[in-house]
Length: 299
Image 1: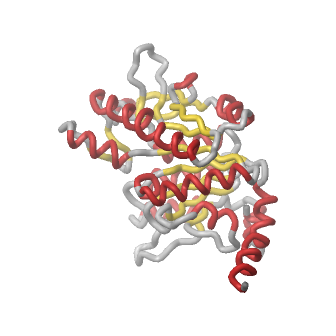
Image 2: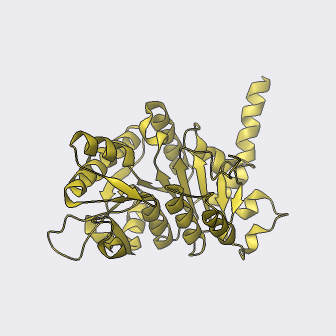
Image 3: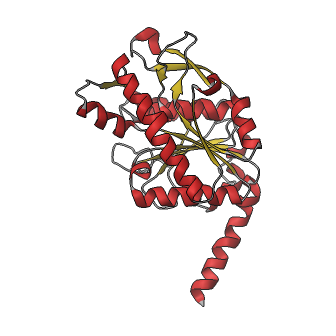
């Protein structure tokens, strides 16, 4: 009986957050172990369906770097990274699109649909939803830099009751162009800004951003991020994530979070509990970030 009372109390504790996020759009960047572990994939799908049933509007942007690397290795196509961004040749771009727009995107869409969600899988090439140009003037090959996101198209899908599942492939202004490989963290950030999302969550294989002693940094703003990048605390593949989080909160998104996708139901733990999990990113001049205010007001 006590366990049942605890369950009821947990539900009651979540009510303020459910009310706060009802009708709001939340962008979720889906990657890491949460995307590859069969059990975590099931939990993820359950979380997304649960959010939808509560009147919250999730938008999924997924990566697929591990699977791309695996297939490139099998095909003996060379690949390397600079500051967390893959350098993409034309041959590897074909593999990128095949994996992201084909295999992974449709698997996620099918899984969500199986669990009762009204999901639709698209890529940035559909209706030129994501426009891009070569990153750093072509230094990264067919890795792209986003110039525009068609937020209206995504919002129209949301209004029709769909959960968009978006593969981060950019469209070129040139006809017959193979397209651009877009960093999924960056794509999620740009999409969140374009559709004026309430929040953006990044599911990763770490508990959040860690200091040099491997302790969790609970909260970061722009100044702290720059300091940690300068002293090497934030490096490699974490750089695009934290840069995306900071850009989002300075361009209309209320909060960004990097959370541990290896934890079952991590999305629900972040959204509906007092403590939350992972690292939150805030804008220093946001009046909702007062240190004496409850987490609810911060959200």
